[in-house]
Length: 70
Length: 338
Image (cartoon, rainbow over all chains, first blue to last red):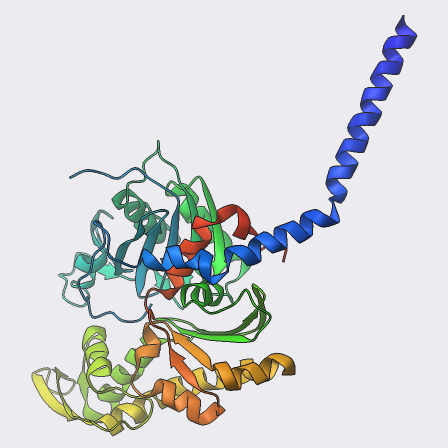
């Protein structure tokens, strides 16, 4: 019985080790996907919505304060 | 007044102005980066526009200060208090802690980076990440940085001027100088003091810059009447300042900005350099509004210079876009894997 439990523990430890090692190495396609998502998020279509939010909203101060540097 | 629920925020923490973009809503705050304090008790008396109006006009026990100089935090404690008040004003409390993206100059040191993120976290942010101003400006100015073409952006702020070449979502070449529109104001102050013997405040110097300042001769030029304090008699005095005098006064600062643009151009790979001749360079930031500056840069570099449609808001809009697409664009944060 102790031998079986020991074997299970060792198997679980090995499985955990391989899972962690695989995660650390990462998959090449993850990098490609991540880069593709970044480029897509920078596309003019994706940016259009943010540009449209230029319209002054309720809390925005619109007075000209004269301080024109940023 | 109804206090809005806190959502994730993008902050352009500029030397001159602070702008805040709220996810899903747009720009919710645009105020000078100034705080007025009671010198004796340390109590905050005003922030933003109200504090800006106090600059140079306060009694001895009140001090109105800009806690950022050259794009960097000069007084950590005051900056933290200013950020805390800003976040409170847009609805952040201890129960609604948003993710915050802050735009900073690319030349910021590791110590300054930590100072900004620590200030934001202590002020109530759940997580604070930084993004380089020229990158945010390029996104906000709608440049096609998702394409493999050379995009050049010149961001002239209150304390820093940065020029970057961006392609495929990354910075290819970068040049930054800690010189900006406040240095132009200071140069005007020094000139008037030296040549006309009168002392003027920084707000008056800024008004002169806006009224008759230029980097290159312009078609319609007028003189300006300047009022200050006579250094010899201590009495109020008026002098006339010409646009030529102002150009002479600010020449060193303007030359330094133009030289940094030229250095950035010379760092760009040749394949991207040829794109600039067709696409031009984009000018953003309040300092870019100086009359004749675009023409001056164009004349010295022989590359067309275009003004962004949103020169003052481009940086915060770019950071706002990053907040809107946080997961996809988190690789663009300073220190993240590129």
